Image: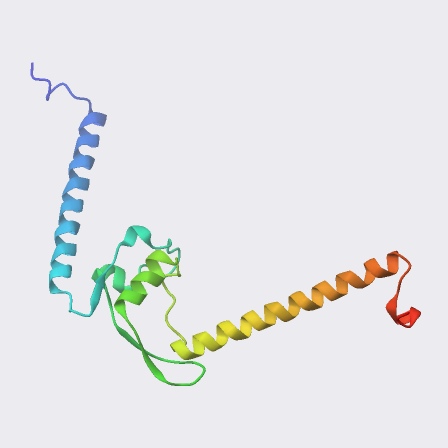
Length: 151
């Protein structure tokens, strides 16, 4: 008897599922290749394996499309129009680990101002924390500059 005939039903089902997966992978690879071929010049290919997992709303449009496109947005601080370039989106989603449903909100100048504002706030809160923590230590050793008059 032939070995192909003597397989169990479980083995045959596993072969069928494996063949189906190979066929689906081949079809999706061909579709992705076709998408890349049709992609505009100002685009960047998507590597979906590098994206954060998406639990709720399904995949964003750029994942199903297979490439990022330049997006026009309006800054929430200064209301200037800006362009979120495809290469920058690729970096944000795939390298920096940004959430796939997030979009650009601030222009470059307003982002720089916001970074400066946050850095200043961190420095000020650090100075306040250091001065507050040093006062009890001075009182513990019997020296309180407020009481002693600075002698």
